[in-house]
Structures are given as C-alpha cells and as structure tokens.
Length: 384
Image (cartoon, rainbow, N blue to C red; front, side):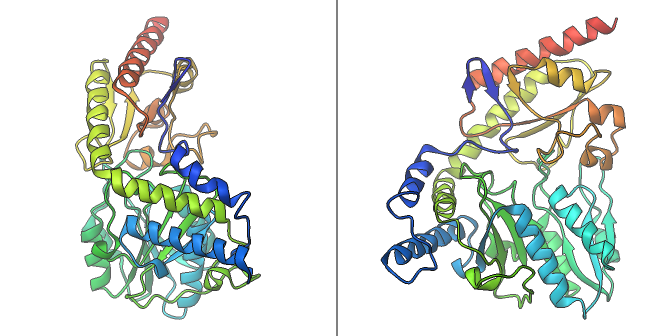
C-alpha cells in the first residue's frame, strides 16, 4: 500500500479497513442505529446484525457462534479470559504456565495475576522462538490450572506447534488458552480441529475496524469462567455494556472476506515476502530471525549488525516499518521477544519488523528493498 511514495509495511500493527467492510458498517451508524438490547424494531434489527456477525466470525475460525463473545479488542479479551478463568478455578490450583515471547497483553495480565498470588512459570525459547516441549510437560504440576501460549508471534511470525502443545496440556488434565490474534486472516485457523479451550483475537488485524475483538470459550471442554466486569447482561454477562453494533458488523464482514480469500492471498503474500528476503539478504551482516522456522507468510524480522536501529528507522522516512509490537514501539528498550531468542541488546535494537498485507505489491517490495539497502549502506559509510 503506497501513498505519495510512502509504503505501508506494518500490517501486523494494524490494517486499513476494507472498503467492503466500511460499506457494511455505514447503515448501523445512521439508518439502523438501534441499541441491540432494545425491545423494538430498531433494537431487533441491530441484534440480528450482531448475530449474523457472530456467525461470520465463528465461520472464520470454525467454531460455534455461541462460543464467541464480543469485546473491545484482544487486550480486553485477554483480561476477561485470564482473570475470569483463574478466578473461577483458583480452588483447583494457583499455577499458570506461559512463555517469555508472548504479546504484552498476555504478559502484563499474567504479571498482574502473579501479583495477586498466582505462581507463574515463564518458559524459555530457543533461537527460533520455539519452546522446549519437554520443559512444558515437566513444568505442569498438580497445581497447574492453565497454560497460555500464542499461536503465532506478532514480531517474528513464528508459529508454535499448537496441536502438539494441546495434546501435552490436555494429557495432564490442564486447559490451554491461546492468543490467535496474529494468525487469523493470515493462515487457516480451525479451532475445532485445534481443540483449544480458550482463545482471543481482534478485528483490526484482518481489515476490520479497531475497537472490536472476541474471546472464544470451547463449549465442549467444560470451561468454567467468572465474570470480572459488571453492569448489564450483554454477551451473557461476560462482557456487559452496550454493544458496538457498527464495529461488530464490520468485524463480521472482515471475517467473511478473510475466510473467502485467505488461501489465495496467503500464497501471494508469501511469494512477496520471500522475494523481499532474497533482496535484503544481499546486504552484508543481516540476519532474518526465525527464518528457517514455521512462520506466518507475511512477516519478516531482520537484524542489521553494527547499525544504529534508531537512526535506521528515522532514515527510512518512506517506509512504515517497526521495531516490534505497536504496543511497545514507543519504548527504547530492546524487544523482549528477540532478547528471549538470544539476541544481544545491540542486535535487538537494530532489528526491524516488516509485515506485508492485502495491498502490498511487487513494486512496493522492490522499492522497500532498495530504500533499506541504500540507507544501511549510507549508515555504514558514515561510520567509517
């Protein structure tokens, strides 16, 4: 996606709303503006639109519509799910297992649970970003009530072997929650097949509006959760408050589009990513993180040795790229993900995340590669 020679390559941070999604949303701001909880025709129309959207979202991830609860985003969904499950099950144990490379929405929420008395095991990862499955198995004790591991990493694109993880966790009688936010819309995600117990995801990563997300609770796996916020009976009491009908309609439409286009689009984007990596590997002293691992088709995380990362990012004025998660991009600390993978502070700080999307073209890729090459070479000469 280009505008006046500026190329957007930060689709893991957010995506533009698809025009088809905007068209679907517009009537619910003006003509069909009713409260979905109102008992009259305006409310009934809004309520019906919400349930259609719930079906569309459920189809994208292959689950029952009744297993989807709408939230304001994945971060709220993480809080509701983690606190709700742990509160309801604390009599069974007080131990949680997670991984050091999770998104901050998960890490900070689990840290808050740890501060209330829960014990947490923070699994290490290898140079690719993978956990040791034997360590996971040995970490589960009689006090463990939950394992929380993401499906795909937002910074490197690394995809965890979630099917194997589910088998290990369920064999021990423990439940598994997964942040699937970065995976949906990029690779097929089949919740019924994966047999996850709980999951969270968001609309704005799949060309839907910001401010809408979802939590998934597997109705076939006897999941008990407690309400942690109060004020109404909406969403069966799990997430009370007036529903964001236009946003939910947009989430539904975005899910419908992603479901129909994902196979063709993922192949196209992976081809562009591979071409960009091929061009960038021509630069001396570069490293593509998680390169030989199972990754999302759109994501590149690349490190440049002996380059000032702050200066590099500032010089790339024509490219919208990032140094990691948008939730932490304003900090000057090295990525916790790359640090966990064994990178030094210096190398982690000289790393870029490049993420491609639906509007990315071959000319965008070629322009980006040339911009990065020229900028890196210029910075190297300036250091001599």
